[in-house]
Length: 252
Image (cartoon, rainbow, N blue to C red; front, side):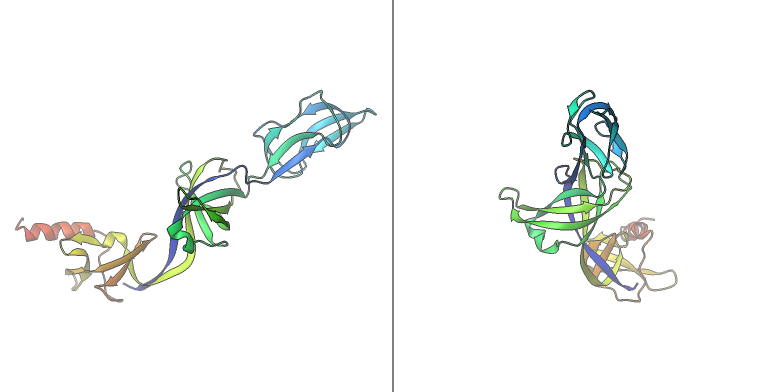
C-alpha cells in the first residue's frame, strides 16, 4: 500500500438555465415582403445559414442569415409579412457552452470558487460526464434554503444537454488530502469498527482495525492502523470476512 494524493471534491445540484444564455437576434436587414422563412423553433443552425428571403421594394431578393451557431428559441415573423431593416425574424441562443446554475449550501460555500473545474452529469446520460467551469458565485444567499447560486459554464459540443435539465456537479476544489488511501471495498466493518486484512505471510491475512477519514473517487483515507508499504486485501475482502466469521462461530 502506498501513500496517495487524492483530489477533494464538492457535490452540488442544479439545472441548465435558458435565461442565462446569450441570445442573437436575426433582423430582416431591408424593407420589403418576407417571401421565405426557413427557420423553425428548436432548429439547430450554423453561422451563415440562410434563415429567410425578403423581396425588397425594388424586386431584389435579400437573404437574412444566422450570425452565430445555436438553436432557434423564438420566431418573430411569418411569411408574407411586411418588414423593415430592424424587424426581428428569429432569436438564436447559444448551446455550447451552456450555462448551468448550482445550489451551493451555506456550509460548503468556502470550498467553491470561480475558476474551479467541475464534472457535470445528468440522468439523461448516466454514463457521460460534461466538462464545466465555475464562472460566478452570487453575493446573495437564499434566506429560506440557505443556498447560494453558482453559475457554471458547461461544454456541450454535441448539443446533448437541454434547457431545464437537472444536473449533478462534482466540483474540484483544488485541495488534496495527502496520506494512505485504499479502495473503499478493502475496508470492512466489524464489532471493533472498520478493519482491513493485512498480508502477514504468503497465504496469511490478519484483520487490522483502522481509523478511516475522507472518501473521494472510490478511495478511502486511512488515518491509523496500517503503514505505507504494507499489503492489504482489496479484492475478495468481503469473502475473507465471511470466512473469518464462520471460523469464529465454529462453523466448518
